[in-house]
Length: 138
Image (cartoon, rainbow, N blue to C red; front, side, top):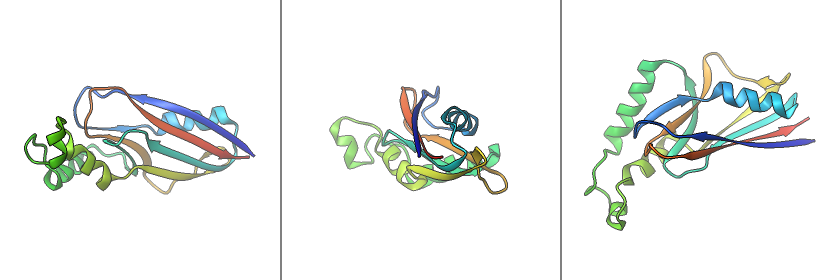
């Protein structure tokens, strides 16, 4: 069995963003040499997310609008912000959108259903953050 670990580094120009990282994850799989196994991708920061969905810009705007309605930004809105932070909303948005995905690797490629892609969701951007890509298999 082979185990391979790499980190993707993200730094979005906007506070909120959705970034397709499928190609970068596929590249890590190719470097690993794993043909059959599993790929874990997870955000290594509590205000960012990794999830699977369709690569369609309208849907991405819908996601960002939806999480903003559920957890709107506001310095005086959250108990967490009493610590001097202003990102209480980002913690909640990450919880809604999820921390990680696991995808099967078959014949050296991500084994997706139709339209599936891997996305990084940023809810407190404009600073450097890591995404773990862990490949396990043969």
